[in-house]
Image (cartoon, rainbow, N blue to C red; front, top):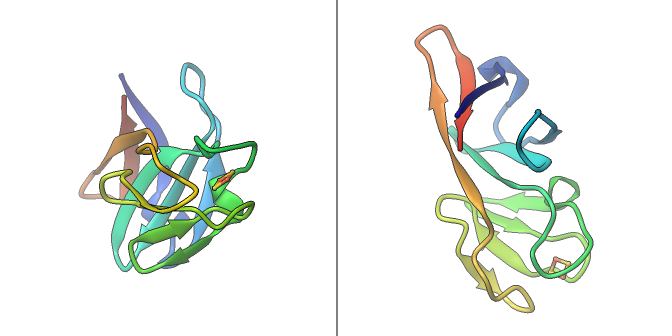
Length: 102
Ligand code: FES
């Protein structure tokens, strides 16, 4: 499934945005130094939204316990996060339209 989630202009470098679309869990989409990424928004460690966390390079820190994930792979970097966060591929058209593939 390929879902359009917006335009590149809506995801400036360093920004985090929560997106909800039919058929997928709430998503966090962000731009890490020009790399647009998409992860499941709800942290897999607890009840927190990663879209309310902090982006530091390619590391996304959870706002609740400061566990962190690599936004490129979803891999957990810092405990208490241990399991990889679900991630989705992002595709960007020549005109800047951003899509998420599940
Ligand atoms: Fe995210 Fe605990 S809820 S690290």
